[in-house]
Length: 123
Image (tube, rainbow, N blue to C red):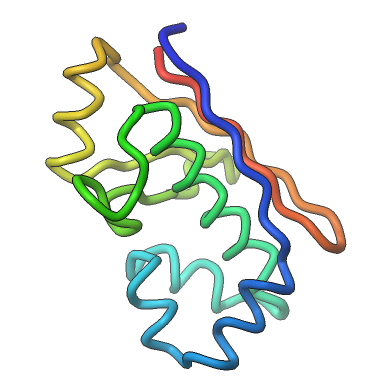
């Protein structure tokens, strides 16, 4: 293991921001694949919040933060076999991973009624 990052998000804050700012808010933060996955659910906000937390946790583990070199859409969460989440990085994210000496990013997501949590490990 090279680095770790963690983030906790209030699900209600994601829902409230979406209601206030509209779909443009979601399109700024999430990839089309993430939106298709989450918006197909009866209640998309726990899954959206978990993915938001994942992006923050990965950016922390990479040591870059978000908003400069990496954007929210630089880091995607894809549902793999059996629903296991995996991280997909754009070119800038891949460069940051390589510069850190990492080869892959592992992610774990969880949510309860009010909060979503993500932990990222750089290996």
